[in-house]
Image 1: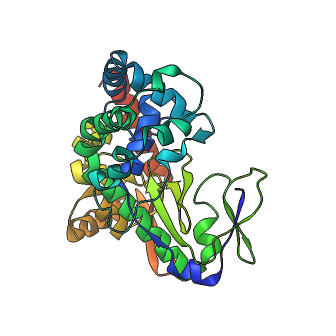
Image 2: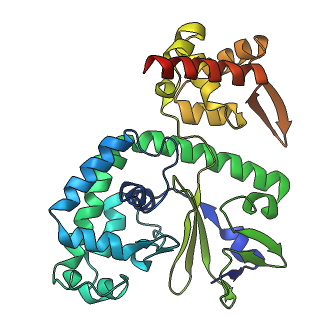
Length: 322
């Protein structure tokens, strides 16, 4: 399915939303070493991966599910369908897996491992996903949602000022707007698929590449990598930097690896709007950040001096082993 044919009505009705199950699937791939880890995607990568390996050690069905669900460039269909409008929580989205027929789930998993031929396969798959959600994603969900919401704000503003080509071209690797109602979603040589009368969702995630999904006959989704940083507040700022310029300003300076608006910084950091504005004013005066207008937004970004300060304090912390 390399090209989707999308008319003006489908584009006009498309929308952004977040999905707890999408983020759980993205995290599952990282925990299982089936997908690359992006900075900030796991709060304690070594510990969480070790805990997941221990969880699977006593669950042969769970191990076979992970192996059969994910290949380097492939994800099983059972994990891809977009959420319905009435599916707002992780449990809502999981209902379709818990109630699926075991044979249907087995048919979508790669390979011929007989370990998967069990009558309670839906429950066994759900148990793995439940563990990832409860143990890794849910405790960090508020932070992730702030990053997703910031990304959605940035993309909808770009859409309003520059159109669909600008909003879609850098959304995920291999995807670009070709014009004349054609959206290339990957480089595979599949016949074009017509989305006329369909509903299209765009869902940010921490995944490095994302994926596409559908629920026949007319609901489709593009899962894409969140462009905003997933920095966990001032935990990502070196202690030396926090002591030097203060924890809040250190957090904001660390977050500005990529240009971000005040609204995005508020969403990602959790700081109040007035506080962010005051700290940005001081960083501007110190020539650690600059700002520029992009459409209707004002974006802040680090100066070379700000980059050097981050580099020096990070290296100092690493040399101390902290």
